[in-house]
Length: 255
Image (cartoon, rainbow, N blue to C red):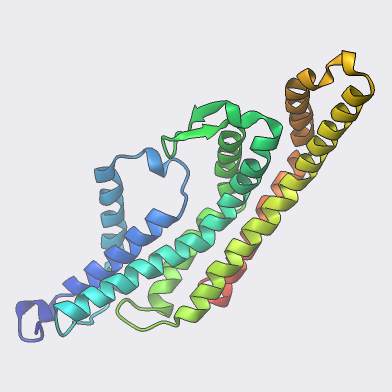
């Protein structure tokens, strides 16, 4: 269809495919502070990255509008796949914080998340800020740039790529997020459960003490003390999740 048009000598379709891949990657990768940028600013940033990669634009020309739409959908899925693999590493701490927030009593206090502009519990917001700092400390920013740069050579836009391996990589990231998040949350949740049982037995033995009224502030103090003690473990959990994400990308030839 476009083989006999002026577009045949210009890699305009390669530019569109690279731009769609960049946009998909930016949507899924949880870059700290990216959610606070305006839509036009993020679009301009994606456009600048695509233009800077002009030497790597493919020369492929689709045969019709249907094939072009299929290629663009494939590139968007490719970018989202890379972003999801890296995003699970950041979401590990958020999953752990959300798992313990209700039991600790912090779910009753909410704040505005600066990234999503939504109400989040105090523990979730604290986990988000910690994950933002560890995002750079663990090298996930380098992994995102390296994966995208190598993807243009390993999987040129417009070419076919194996979807099963990507599904396995995303599944491995989700499994690691659940496992490591529960490792972080279960010690605190178990300690708070023992606190509830202890206060309930003490109130049963001596009904005049009314110890259950102290459960709410006591559990919050115990949760804070437990989180302070688990601070080094938090760094280890995040680094373990980052290693899983980077290893998944390496198996795909993007590490």
